[in-house]
Amino acid sequence: MIETDFLVLGSGIAGLWYALRAAEHGAVSIVTKKDSADAATNYAQGGIACVMDPKDSFDAHVRDTLVAGDGLCKEDVVRTIVTEGPARVRELIAFGVDFARSKEGQFDMGREGGHSARRVLHATDITGREIERALLAAAARRRNIKVYENHLAVDLVTTRKLGQTGPARCMGAYVLDKKAGRVETFGARLTALATGGCGKVYLYTSNPDIATGDGVAMAYRAGARVANMEFIQFHPTCLFHPKARTFLISEAVRGEGALLVDRNGRRFMEGCHPQAELAPRDIVARAIDAEMKKSGADCVYLDITHKPAKFIIRRFPNIYETCLRYGIDMTKEPLPVVPAAHYMCGGAVSDVDGRMDIEGLFAVGEVACTGLHGANRLASNSLLEAVVVAHRAAERSGDMLAKLPRNHLAIPPWQSGKAHDADELVVVSHLWDEIRRLMWDYVGIVRTDKRLQRAKTRIENLQREILEYYWDFIVTADLLELRNIATVAWLIVESALRRNESRGLHYTLDHPKHDDALAGHDTILAPDAGA
Image (tube, rainbow, N blue to C red; front, side, top):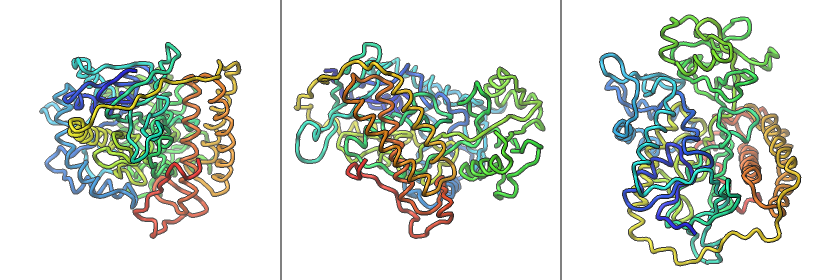
């Protein structure tokens, strides 16, 4: 058994920040599915929303977040994260993050949908990559941080799973060493879930391949509550190209004046919302979906050709170069775009310190549902939440570590029993494809009760097939991820069926209006709910 003080599952901004701060108190082991830089953070283009301009205010940022969250944000959590943001940003800069500045040395603040001011710090259009670079370099300098690449967590180990009575406590996790093909046991006094989101549950997504909802699925199986999984944010503008199905066109492009137009060059957002192209993401994504269905077109277009070419290339160098590789010059022609699954606003229930129902277990970053995002995440609030909550969680963990006894229960090694190597891997790939297609078709931007019920029936049948396959065959990374996306798909569908209204990202034709009685009401699923 590999023993450590802190076990961190995930190596994005939240996991790395937690690890760096926790390392001030003890030994840290980071488990990551691929290489350490392969995280959703690395794909974040826009930036981190934070009040750094004297003309801006915390109250304005809080208000914008609450408006976008459509009646489900926890205002105390929002205010805590917004007000603690500037201190965390200064620490990011101290770690070596190079945010864009003007010639005068001031931060070059961008503006994105739903914000009433320019408050998005960025590193041109590769902000996530820059943050990931700086935090990985800082982690590499710490001798008591060890990174296990190409390792995938199988399940959390809790005292209840070990047959103990009383409140559940997390003892670590079983982890698959993907290269060696064996499951290892990690014992930890404290564990942090920082596994990111679940975009790969859908057929089209802006997320990397690793975003299979592992943390939410593991937390639910371990006995933790999960909340608000019906609120899946679809980013309005992913590049529509056969070879670029996951390339995001940052909201910052609209923030700098890009217009959404149909195939005839006609704008269509002006009649949808007072902020037009800068409306919150749920409104823009639904408007694009409606336009595509009305016209029968495969995509709409994002047009920034009215801006000077030098400005476009300087402000969006990565987007410009990438599109150019696909034969599209955004300085001369509109970009074809479509919505795609982007961000999970629900997740494992945790407080603003990252604490969960299970003692010794924390959730930080996208995997967590803290109450910040409500029914719809305000653009660029995700990186802000990640650093603030991970910082608070690490501080809380440091305080707890001194009082926690060493794990006295022996964690049994992983047993494969009579399971044998799978001889029909096509079954896994078929089931994976079926789940993603039915989620896209039945549980997308616009929903109905009938579609949701069909999705639930099919997913529950698929879960039974997957469970049988799981017990019969030796586990592989593909099988584990399939098991997780099936669990997360069920959680999304079940949550959507329980919310009989339209609010934020959850829009259903059968219940098209708000139900005032559901304002502030979270959709909570406990593990005894029948998954």
